[in-house]
Length: 195
Length: 195
DNA sequence: CGCGGAAGCGGAGCAGTGCTCAGCTTATTC
DNA sequence: GAATAAGCTGAGCACTGCTCCGCTTCCGCG
Image (cartoon, rainbow over all chains, first blue to last red; front, top):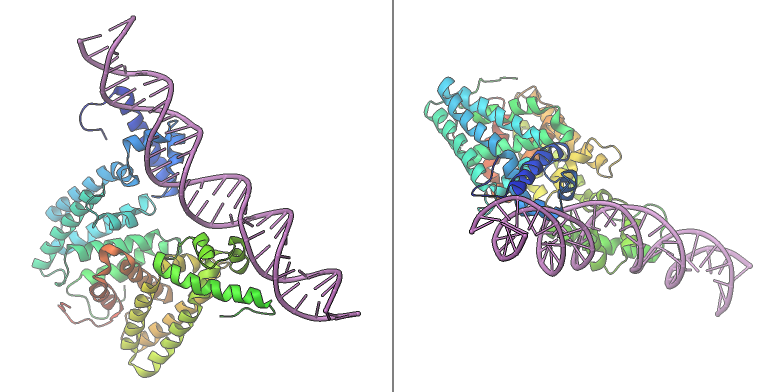
């Protein structure tokens, strides 16, 4: 929400205003919204936007930072209040639901997780680690299948989030979650369960 | 591979040559390759490309037509040679594997399936129907869970294909298939299976 | 063979994109 | 109030998809 070090008052005002405007435009047009559009709407030169957010990912990172932190914290919360298997499943569900905030954000996150220079890299790695802890806990309790690690869980969430982002399949998102995530995560499925 | 009705010899030559060039460039740069690049490489004006392929999807459709037909036929093949559950699983695997041919093609297919005007619409619907038949057969044999229909299977395949298309997760494609698809499709999973 | 018309072709042009950078403005300090 | 460093602007470049009109070429017919 703020910048490191000292900044001129006008610069900070522009930064905050840009972020506010970007939030609306990215919510409407998705992660590949026009940067020119954002700058223009904010009443600011294009160069100013690039000064504060040198890459598109830097802008997205600023936009998503608090949500990522909230999801990471949520993982700890759930681990403390729900049985291992349910905590894992709930958190997975919340993650996929979150991505509906901004179209196309899943793709960016997946790209960022193996690109250490990306501004989003750290947040994504942290998110994966939070999921990995929930997963391990569930595995140790025998509530999740073995043979999966944090990256697999990340991929599972990403795949589901991506499906929920596709207009043609979005209205089935809930059902797809049951079909794909539940059996993938459960170690002891009910024989013949039909959802 | 050819056009309907009568066409001038030079037009047909351009059509075929464009398709050949496009195949290479799309294989290299993905489904959103530069059309100008394709036209230039083919030694043809941009207008000529648009004359033969009025939309990007029309071009992709021409590129994918035979593969789609092959996959549809393959579904029939598998239904005739494998037990229902295995046929379904094998076909699903082949579908996801196919999409690695061209980056980004999954996204286009998913978009096309609910856009009747898309040049790819018919092919995608046909593919979904072929999958639906395999799925129903497996369900009737008790080898696949109930509560899934053709669109769910299509989504499952699309999700897996998309994951396989992401550089960060591609090298786990096989494992992800086991984690996501197998438990989603099996009606009678082995308790505690660990892959 | 030559000719006319229709089909096909080319690429400049428009509006949009991401991104850079030289020159100007302004906030802050002394 | 002046000096200075930080910040701001938007024209400009290279690219994108897509259109459209003037030109070329092919093909059937006489």
